[in-house]
Image (cartoon, rainbow, N blue to C red; front, side, top):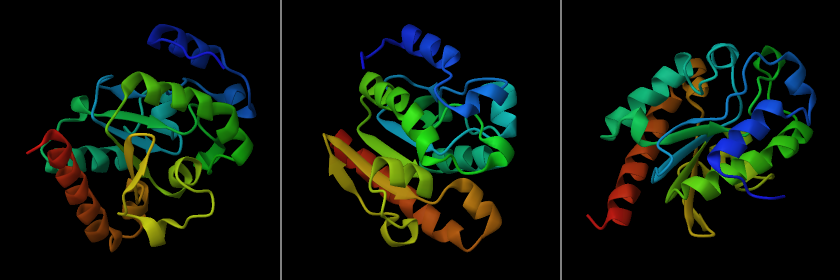
Length: 188
């Protein structure tokens, strides 16, 4: 696959029909934020509000993510936020492996264009497709992995915190680790 610049990446995403998710989408949700960000968040896929707006993480889970980003001293505009798949799975179900495989090259292209120092996998789906398909989020969340010059860490998806508030403490611990790693990388 040929790597694309931002303009061509957006164009290719907008016309993609490599999986069935394209049939029912309102908008392709490519991602948003600082294209030179040191920190990139990756979720699983757009929900209903994201499909309506074309923006990632704008619903309740997105509001929680924005608060967590702000709590570590950053603004949402300073990071980059994307998903494994760019189109909404029906009824917000988890993307299938085939859907993720059809879309993952777009995400890899985004990572190569952005060149973040840190990638945070939000939830099990992102973790499985980026870190290890056999891993369990409850066992490796909060642990750093270095791969190809990127520091990668999985944490809970913000939607999981909305369903189970006991995860908020662990999520916050992970965000403190993210803040620490950003300072370490910056030489502070």
